Image (cartoon, rainbow, N blue to C red; front, side):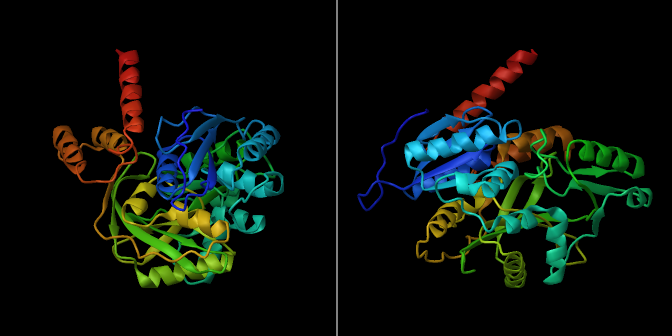
Length: 390
């Protein structure tokens, strides 16, 4: 256990309790901070080490790795819920979402997702683009990687798994990363590796353009409770946002997203990612039905997505909030430094200087003056890594 805050809700009643089950990642920290700020008592649990010490985290637990022992993972989470009285439990990556959803009847509290078949359908990359096409959203061409489709590859193509982890098939790989392949031979090799790891490989058209995202929370009745939109001028090597900025919510895109979520039976948090070419509409490439990497940006723009989701899951009459403030900036600083070292835009020193200049005034996943522990821990960890390589 990291520490106990003993924080009570604004009403003087014992706070509601939320448990976030994770495998690491700054999106967990952003979720914990948002929930804590709204009066929740937050526990976190992982098989992959403690979350960096944060004032937002009331308790920190160890659980078995779901990819290695799903039964023990579910039993441990259920025991934590029973012992500590958690009201709602969130999975912070696809594997936790899928496993908790599939076995929600064993958990003992609210597991805040749609019916399990709808959860699988929304996370399945092929089912997602098919549903998006039906409701009028633009999508890149996507097909199953078969010998015939691989043989027809002529140029760059994205190879991605239908599901990062399949609760029906199991498998020891917890997250099968998408990869942009230069051509047929590389695509075939990556698809074979993905299939061997238990994934169903897909081939998806490469869309040149900028990455954007629209994040929403809708309740079980389909009411929109909050929305924030962003675009990303800098991407990490994992094609996630090093930098992002909030923009006005596009009403036409929001209407399409709401049609898609209704088509798929989805409620709760949805982070939808798009690639926008200069000469065409935004094309949907992914849906994260969980806390996501740049979550701190939506929260920093005034849209407390984790709290809206948690209260909606417990059946509260949640009042919708205004869209995110425009012009709020996000920076994942350490990833941005790594990007600058790799890309060297205008030269290494100029890119690093730009990265440093972008930091003041931006929302950061680690840095928060009210909660300095995670940043200090991240700095110490990077110092140890640098020392080990000297």
